[in-house]
Length: 416
Image (tube, rainbow, N blue to C red; front, top):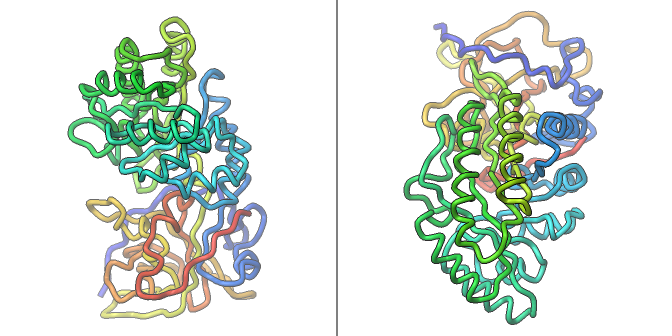
């Protein structure tokens, strides 16, 4: 019985293949696996991380500050590298805050966002001197008490749930009813409380959506966000110092997707910066990116432990799976499952994969049919001991996966 292959992805040429073997920054994958000591593992490329930040620095206006949303990849070594490359770090918990501070990020350039911040987390934020993106009226009296107890005013910005959404976003974070941010119609009342309690107002944070490959849509959201912030600034108790327009820049995962075109976004941001210089002269424009900075710089590597044929379908069973890489399994937001880019690489010396190909599925060891890394893809014929590689794995990988599920070992992460 034959099964049709899934559509082929564009070549993942950010990593070099030599002699049929994938290399990660000059190191053959087989040797990297031996150096790590065990599979499965994630490997992140310093070179690609630096190149992506440099690319953005070249493309975006010099006036724009670039922040890293570390929720995308909170590995301490990655955060430490990024802290030295970007202008600031966005955290989403007190745990991430401690990682960012340990990594050397300046507290003045750390922002803390997320709904449901616990009282002790808000106290830690005020004690650390970071900017709190307020998402609920409930947070304000807690911040006021923390300010009084610590003898320093809480630095606050208002995360606004806008009255518009964004076309083309894989995940909408604003517009309509949302758990994120303060509904725009409630912001004036919240600003009045900030003024009354003497909190240190600094600006606004707007994040309309994520994983967007449509440059025109991103430009539209940035302009609308700027104009909304300008309107809200009329009720602010102090001049706007920080205007975080979010990010949402996407990366290609699936067949037919094309890389985001930065040129129109750059031109649009230049116009926004020119307006801000006139209309909000004390404000810094911030772009906050996570996936776009780190997503393409990582691979997930698992070893094939069994080769099975069931009623004509080939299954390559690996020692990794959805418990390490929930996103690649399709269970992290996909409505209709699609394959991430996947490749195979020889795992044993003197045994190249060869030119023969077949339609095969790459699965993990878990007792669930959801444990699927590649569904009926056209791949080289592989054997036990060879390595399966999932590209575009630098974001929302290990930390976004249920690693304790079914008691299998956790995976290792390395920065190469």
